[in-house]
Length: 126
Figure 1: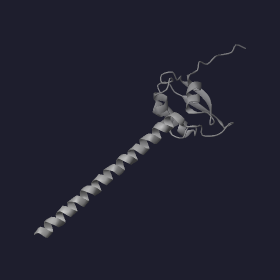
Figure 2: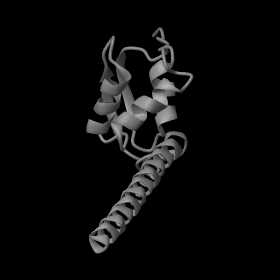
Figure 3: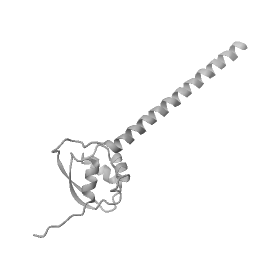
Figure 4: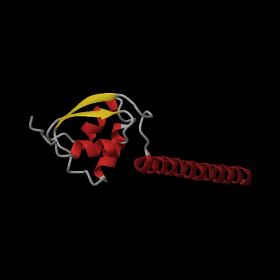
């Protein structure tokens, strides 16, 4: 009887330790992913070195940040559309992007693309 109680206690202790190790592993992995995402939000480089490739992008009125990010990802202007959406939401350009057709370059950073899409288009009289 005492042997079975001892075995149950050992089994319970081993299972408890295993669960604690698993929880610590999950927390460390989640922290690593969160750190990586946070780091990339502020340091994401352009996809290509200059001169890059020019690509046309049409921004529609009422387009969400995530829709725009996904469009830029489809065009291979950014690596991750979700990451671009986060960058846009925390940037000074959050509510300043304008609908229209833009020529963006694969050597531009996300911030440079936001700047282009938020500038007033000046018409020249000829």
